[in-house]
Image (cartoon, rainbow, N blue to C red; front, side, top):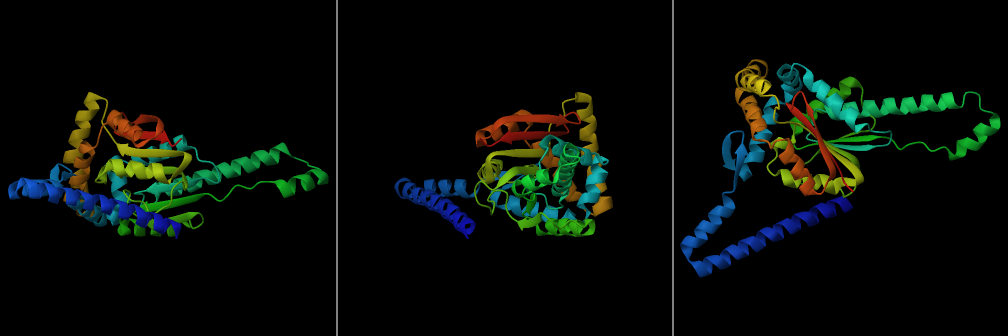
Length: 323
């Protein structure tokens, strides 16, 4: 209930700001004449952004991106393997290795519809818990009855780890849910329909926020980063895995040729969708490079921001903390 009220309050604030802007536009219209009014209004309504290499009105981008992922959802995982030659699995494993989550951690995986990061997270914390239990067992091989009696009432057990997968696209979430069922994963896993630019969660809720290969598809990156700051607990960690700028010039030329000449063809052959994969390739080229994105994360309020180049910068892993 509190979360719903806070979300409603934020929306009312945004709406009031829009109304103030509209009123200001009307005032300037009355003093400046019809022609100046029309120019001001058009500028407000016709803000544009990129959709791949196309320029589109901001209001259209979210709908177009939604349609792309709705079209590719059923073949999304197969195409990831085909496009990256399976290397995307190593990139995601590296994300978990750097994250190093401990039992009891709460993860929010945004734009994570098929569940790859959440599944790895739950498997990782489970292995960490088992390792801790084995270590504890070795350290007390033959405890006395008194040792057991003294320890038992005060022994702390970690809270259950939780992974929340949040995605705006219902088709992607459905694919993820089916994967979870087929893998027998039920405990500690939730699926939520939500917009990365306006998350349906209270402040200070999660220990870790991840977004893997999703942030380049949003309309306002700055709003996504601000929402990440908001929902993380103090000390919480932001981690973003995203395609970036290749650092090796020779590899960069080969990568461009592969991206534009091979990936759309794979999309047509495997998923029956050339245009969606043409967009995905173009969206990578429009995303900020490693240093620029690092600055954006810092501007949002994160500290100790750093990044790791994977496969010569084909992918970058950015990390920052909420203090």
